[in-house]
Image 1 (spheres, rainbow, N blue to C red):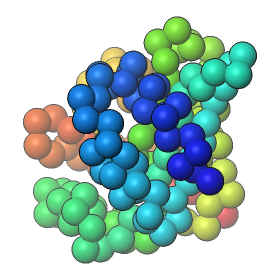
Image 2: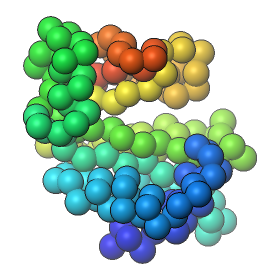
Image 3: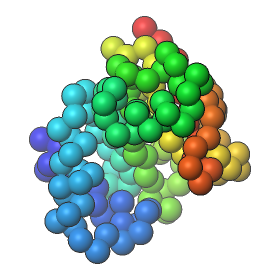
Length: 159
């Protein structure tokens, strides 16, 4: 079902993150690779029958690249967070649709009614970045940084 939305999601992705030179490769990774993960979810936002934003995530597990990376990089700060968490992977809103609550609604839709007790994501460590402001306003906490200033944030999910 989610593959039906691939081209529209790629269009938003290209506008937000930069043009994708190899759409067929993008369709394999990250699109198909992430959709194949357990617990995959896709949230979409439309305005006037046009996709204006998306968010996706899945269940993160030990042995996967990113959970293992942050476990090594954050050590004790990641204890109790990694493995069985919901991994909030992508959130993108077209520039023309920003400032209208689309990101907040996508965030909330993606996380609604999850069976997970916690969620993790990576973002910039710049507190003025709109994404960081959104996540902080929704209760996400910084667990630490790794690499070139990437921040890992965690959220305790309601049951």
